Length: 79
Length: 225
Figure 1 (cartoon, rainbow over the protein chains, first blue to last red):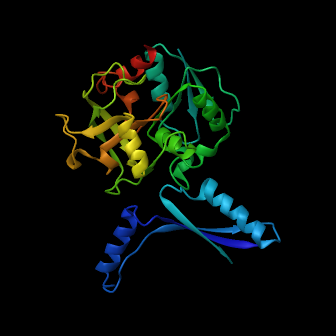
Figure 2: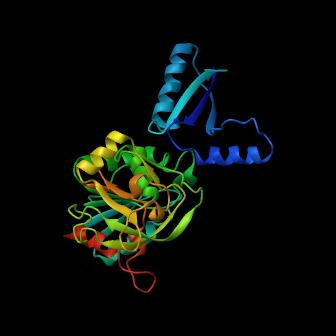
Figure 3: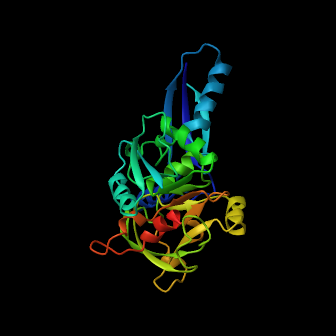
């Protein structure tokens, strides 16, 4: 079973990298661009048949290592 | 006094801190991260560097290593723990210190001597400094922008847990004297029990007039007191 996890900075945490990417795109003429937040993407394969059990495990992975919950949020999606 | 320096793949200030500790007559041992037991120590130092190449987040992988379990046990039983630079980042990833270190606000790696002010001189790490004393200490980091939530920030102030703040050479604390965007110019913090200090500046680089100054020495002599 495959899942994706995206980790992004929380709304109220400053994202200087996202800001620089945003400014560069604006300079390239993307004038309707409103905002960019940069994050991380993980593709995770897990040896498990029960989707609920697998999701629980992935959640544990996010909490223990993949995200720093002080500054980051995460989303899990089944692929 | 016995000290241990934990060495991870990518640590690069481990020799410097060992030299500083030995100069101050600590009986020091280097401990490779794969060890599962710690030698008896009064002080454990997590040195600066780029453990695991800063993969995932600075300090994230080192923060889950085998030896860290032992460091947490030692910390909980009152052993003194000092985390410098990457060591500070690792301590926040283990949860021994609250908050985290974000990317520098200007997105640049900063390597220069900065001024920091002693905010707490009643801890075991800082007792030899004068309150409000201005030190000149080297910083060299990409993620030194300390961040924490409001609740913890209040606790830091209420319990006098802020050890050092970035300032100018006269001791003025302002945005202009903040090199990396750290919240309230925080350069180093203590845990609630005050046996753990995490700081971004490198006191181990300031122990010899020949190469820098000696502003870092009192941190080590405070511990010997």
